Image 1 (spheres, rainbow, N blue to C red):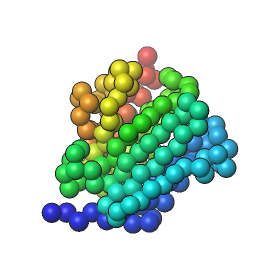
Image 2: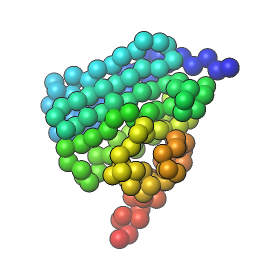
Image 3: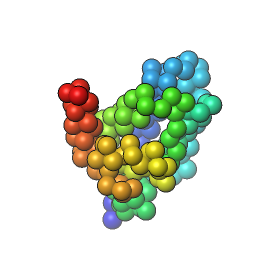
Image 4: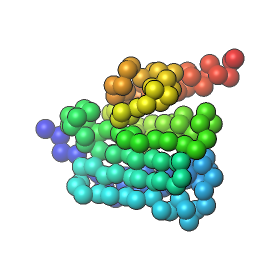
Length: 151
């Protein structure tokens, strides 16, 4: 049995990355982006939540046994952007992959995706609504972006 412990440095890295994404990609002020809620009830997982208007992100990070028992996962529970098809989803996934690799996460999972999100997921290599390995997702995003440039 693995003993997953997420330290403060790891939590801070996810928080800071999400804050930077909210400012640079979604266009919010630093003050607005600082309203991210970080909840940490146990040492093996935490959640991050940001909601302003139609921009809505809720992430579960750590050991979530229903996605991959005893492995570190990044779970996107809610994702919504006021501007769709603007590259925000791809950019967020790229940032989460970087953090996933840095802190040795195994999987990324999107919970209960709507049909539009499922379409987006297929373009990025997800199989149905199953978790995807961080490594596989990073490679799929690179292929997706290379294909878009060629077109």
